[in-house]
Figure (cartoon, chains in turn cyan, brown):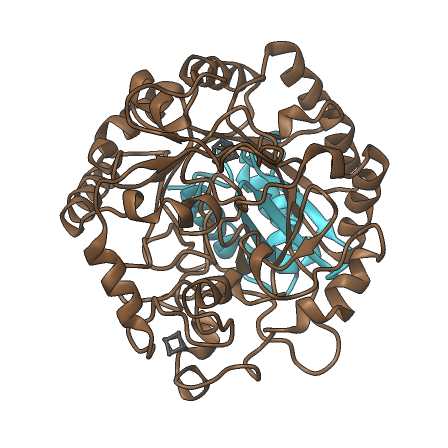
Length: 87
Length: 430
Ligand code: SF4
Ligand code: SF4
């Protein structure tokens, strides 16, 4: 499971990009496109292989004061890691 | 790449993780001439949502994916090729500047994903420029290749131009068997191509079109894919369009073959980690039609070598007038052309589709197949067990047999007989 020390990075085969036509953020990979909501995109944008999960949570707390960031972010990251989109 | 989007068994992001809204299957009916599989949205059996569904009133939702058939030329002669039997000659191909503009227009229209396909796209001397134009426009590019003609220098150029991934075809598990289906010596080049792609670190997918002559080698094929370092393996049962339709009798497998192959795939799935194994179901056997491209004019478009634009790569023979990028913008073609509107949504349907609960799931099946088998593109796809014409499919399945393969070749100038028939002895020299 996700530990606070893990430094997640978007997988090399996966591109995180904004889609100006649809006004949304996307994960793009061979044969698949995933539409992201704002929170998911904000988390993934911080997955640069440099920040730890703990640091990502700390940064996002400011941006999403209403959201249960400390619980949601690690869970989300574990899910996208299981998909192979983040490592 | 697949066929009017394969159903059933495909790898699907079942529950999009919290925070990801929707996943989109790109690719589609014979999404490439290789018949590679479209991953994703399968027949409504899960929560994956196909975006772009039936056109509501007003503008259709923008397309996600484009199949760029850069050329119909190919050094191989696969009898299962889904390119049209009337291959578009090289003299009618678009110029570099046309493709550069098409990439720009596609990105502006909403295309996120482009398959650079063919034929063999490496035959285009300007492939690097076309790739760079797509990448500059922000499009994710996948090269769909036989591997023939991919040397280190060429690949380095393409990577430099922004190529994102490579899908390599192979015809069977061994050199001899693969070369026999390809109709030319090509296995060694494929092996080398796989190695070069792995060196670059680009994601590598292996695509194998399955039929009567190679379905028994599925284990060997998966072993080969692992040895070559593929991250995705698409085992795509032949969809019968173009050359495959011509060779249907000899390519159709037996039910036993299919059942055994499917069991093998399931065993591999239990063992494999980090390698995605996609099984594209054959729609002739289960009475379940393929969802047509995730909807006609809903998710993707195909641009042919001569600039004609089709909602599906299998549609060349439909009695529609396909617009051309030489005459119209891609936006006009997508939003205004009659060909893209012809089977959008569900209003065009006849019974039993019209009142069927699955009509928004499979869109009545494949239009091209309905036309090829019944002469009327609006009829229910005969692959559907509910179709009044379903007996056509069951009869075909029962009448399948050994038979001769007709290898894919360009039409010869007048006087020479139709495509040469090559038996199962030696690959045709070319
Ligand atoms: S002949 Fe074979 S390799 Fe060439 S385009 Fe057709 S399927 Fe692909
Ligand atoms: S009747 Fe038409 S809509 Fe219903 S399952 Fe068959 S093809 Fe699909």
